[in-house]
Amino acid sequence: MKRIAQYKKLFQVESTIELADLKKTYRKLVKEWHPDKFQENDPLKAEAEQKSTEIIDAYHFLVSIAPETLEQNLPAYTEMITSSIVSDFQYKGLTLKVTFHNGDVYEYFGVQANNYKKFASAPSPERYGRRHIFTSHVYRQAAKSTVEA
Image 1 (tube, rainbow, N blue to C red):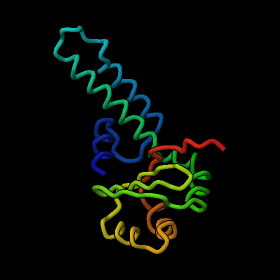
Image 2 (cartoon, rainbow, N blue to C red; image 1 turned 90 degrees about the vertical axis):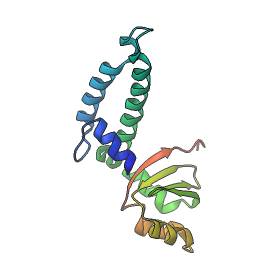
Image 3 (spheres, one colour; image 1 turned 30 degrees about the horizontal axis):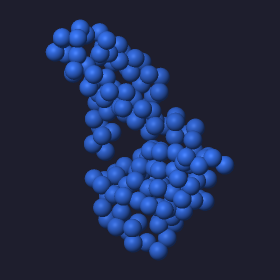
């Protein structure tokens, strides 16, 4: 949640994420902080390189959790959470990272510790996750399966 807030602040997003606005802000920020704008001996060049990397990471992250992106991928996501088995998971700082048997990895944000404990100790983490985590928390696909059908 901290990362979401930080990236939203960088892109001046106050409520829902609109892809069109995000793209405009991204272009403006990249233009402003592009490292090629600065001379080699300019002390701001190193800062610009770091800032441009942060801008790119933030843009890709915010696009991945934008309602438009999630809606577009909803049929495939629904199919995956209903038919795939959880093969691994990690929990750190309100973020639950779940690896499914098909190789897809999703991050769920804002998962409280007590909810995670119930998920981890459930006889069927998939069933508990479908009911209490997978559709009720902000999520993003962190990695896609590398296996081709």
